[in-house]
Length: 192
Image (cartoon, rainbow, N blue to C red; front, top):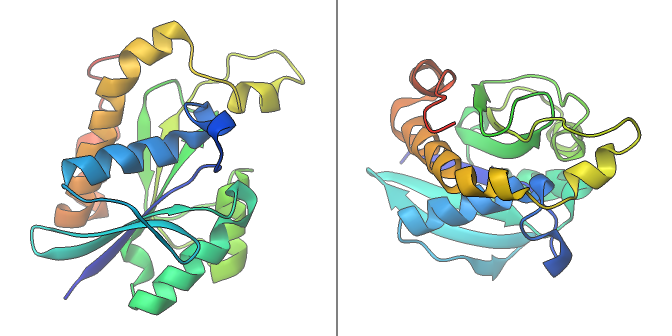
């Protein structure tokens, strides 16, 4: 059976809920709800085990903090014998305008600590990722505060729609593969 691992990146703790850096966790929550799955405590984080159109799917929210996310990804890839091309990592991205999503089959970490950790642990950049744009509306030297800050009211009103686009893209990735999904979703600006 074809297995998939969907990894939402974020930081654990009440203070990080609804921060820009935790968009991976939020999209994972929406995806789990969409697939009628429930997170349970497991090795290296919270895990859902479900099935989508006959494909066994694991949704993981690592509890290792962002800069150690690679430990969780490496463990679950090995434990479930999941091929790297079937592992999709969801993260925030400062270089993409708010609410836009960009899927890629591989690439560098672009300075993202969670992606750096994954790359270091699995010794590869050859895994798909879904980057969710958080924009870069901050002053010089304020990047950390911005990334770890809460969404603005205006962003918050649009967030639900954009997250649902992300969930649809993940479902497409599982069923139709990365190339078809990129063609359909990388230019999706509907609802912005």
